[in-house]
Amino acid sequence: MRKSILFISLFAIAFYSNAQLQAPVLSSPADSAVVVRVNTKLIWGASIGGLVFGYEVQVDKDAMFGNPITSFPVNGTAAQTKQLDFNTRYYWRVRAKGSGSTYSAWSATHSFKTFNNEFTSLSPTGANRNPKVSISWDTISGVSTYHYEFADNASFLNATSGSVAHPGNSLIMDQLKFNQAYYFRVWAEHGSDISSKSATATFTTRNDIALLSPDTSATKQHPKTELKCTHTPGVTSYKFQIDDSPAFDQNSLEFQEATVLDGDFKASDPISWFTARLQYQDQYYWRVQAANNTGKSAWSGARSFSTISKVTLTAPLDGSVNVPNKTKLSWVKIAGSENYELQIDTDSTFSDPDIHITNSDTSNIHTLSLTEWVKHYWRVRSYHAKDASAWSDIWSFTVHPVGIDEVNELSFTVSPNPADNIIQLQLYRVEPGDVHVDFYNTLGTLVSSRTISNNSSNVIDVDVSDLNSGAYMMTIEVNNVQSTQRIIIR
Image (cartoon, rainbow, N blue to C red; front, side):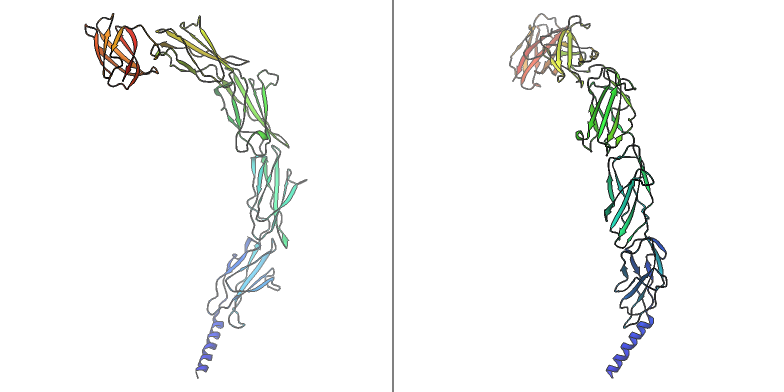
């Protein structure tokens, strides 16, 4: 009895499952989809209403499925196609398998059309492209090879052609002509079919070079000035020209020309060239032309700049006082100068100057044996073999004997010396009045200053507890009379 009941139950379940099993609902690709990859995955929803033991999938070029090219059982809800023909409409349907040899009804039939030549990311396009470019296109799944044609004419006469294995989708084209239109197209292949050729993409190469520096109308450029332009991929040499005429007359004495070859620069760096011995205080024009194995670009637009007229002094500052006898006169170097001439005189017209000549690596000179308490005037100019600059501005300074090695006639005495906290000044040949006291370190820098009333005895106590241990030059001034003496603070 139990066996009969079990048999009846199993039969009822099987009958109910097959009777109620519904056809699958197709999901992807969408019905009537186009540009579908030739290895597309077919996806559907699971059948409901009964037990499912798999699915049967049919794919055919015939909507009636008279000769399906794919008919196979699947244990999931997706099936992978491969090497479908390009530019072909396919029809597909699915049915679920129940127990035994029973099936659901077939699903609705969907169709899709495979990829033909719909490459949408062909690059580059447009104008001002470098003479070395990367040609690239879409990656298409399900293919094994891409073929390409590249030419300087839309008819692809004498075109460069070749192949790139998938998944590669680019190649480098180098040494292209300047100011030239180029055309390229691609197509795909797998083991059983070849697609149509893509639409033609086109671009035009650049015909000039971008200048970097000096900026347009720059001023105060040196006789040796660095000219810079951008590096353009695909260029193997750069020709620089500079002249004091915008006509770039090669017979001009100021015309200069140089070529920078590809072995002399790095692809990541700007291209640069240094001029030689430009005139001071002159106007110059410069431009650049690029070249490679296929030709030359046009000349870039010309830029202009003016050169520096004179040296700039830096130290000691104009009008300085208390300048040590052995001081350093400094100025700003000018690149391209070969020598500097310095003149120093107690007469602002330089009627009888001391003249010092230094080389181009020097931007200072030390003075010796200058007259104390006297204003000195100085100026500098630079020159090279072809020209000399104007004189710098005239600066002045007054020598004050504050160097540690200098000795003056004393108008006062100091005791004790060396001292600790208090020193006593004994003044001589000085009328009573306020005494101004300055302390300078051994570099001639003022470190402390004070004013003290002078009594009739001309003896003054001075607190020096604020000074660090060391040697100092102490200058006193009373009634516009000065004197200096060295002291030691312990």
